[in-house]
Image (cartoon, rainbow, N blue to C red; front, side):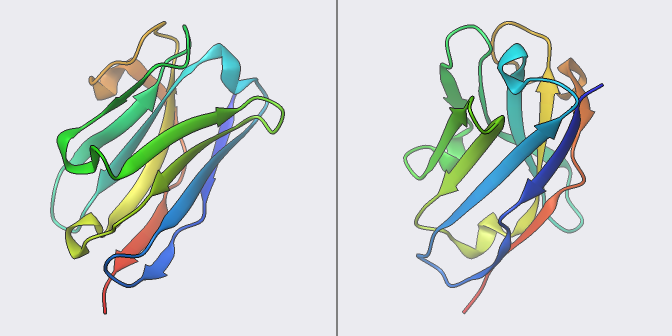
Length: 124
């Protein structure tokens, strides 16, 4: 069974960048579509984007379009979320999750295994 660990979160000033990692053990991430989600305090968990199992095509939710990039490193069994031009409203706990769907899905129920999350705080 796949086990996911997110890392790379922290405190960053507005306009700064962070690169979050999602590393896996117990299985190969290449066998999954991998999604990134975030949950701000007092708010629902929302999708950030995903990278498909089929052809590594990516999808981004509107808040991160043009600022966030998801990529996969098969050799390291990892998926990354590069976040640039960060804003205070990007502050949240960020989660990665895997789905056996062949293509990206926006439905959280499609994702069967989740990491524990990593905190991202954007503040001056």
